[in-house]
Length: 263
Picture 1 (spheres, rainbow, N blue to C red):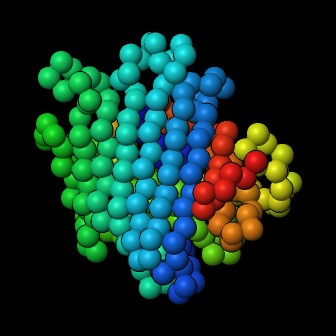
Picture 2: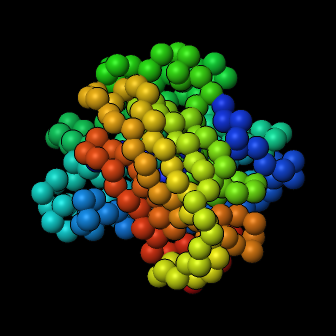
Picture 3: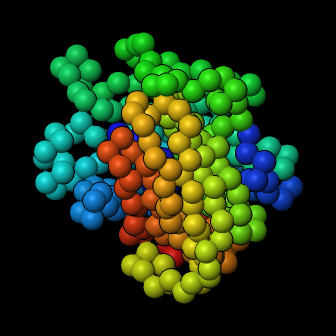
């Protein structure tokens, strides 16, 4: 359960093209999710996305609560951030991702700091203290090329033009785990949740592990649910994400688009 592949989460990326006007847009998305692991509410995941013109940022925080938090003693609490640019097509391209957390020690009470720098041809991962864990087996340079981090993946689905379920997300999570999410439409639905009420779409998601997980990972079929909003943006209501300890589900408790709460 070290990090999300979602929560979201959240996800180059040819299928994420948006309209040309999206490059100059100012827009935002904020969410609070419950983390559900093995059918148990285990924590909170908060997420914020901001786009100003041709640049964007996203931040997130995960905190394990209740019995899970007590047993794990903050070892699974993380903070995340990313910044990047919006391409001419409207796609989100990360430049610098980082997260901090994990098992604490007296000499680093906030946990280990991991940074991943995204370039057009590669992703370079560093750690403080180092060296960085590149996974087993580590992703090759070719496998790292044209990928995005998990925070950008969530944002890419939020601002998707057209059906968010018609795309493939090439994700390099935490500068270590490499996998694809292959999304296909799975029907329109009427959503009535504590976060939003109204029309939405469901995605069937094929999780295809590629490298870096440390132990064999089996492909899996996941499910995402998005609410359609009047802003033209999509609000993720539920997202299933692979972690070190199996798949977890993020269930929205509060969703806001451009500063307006959906329910």
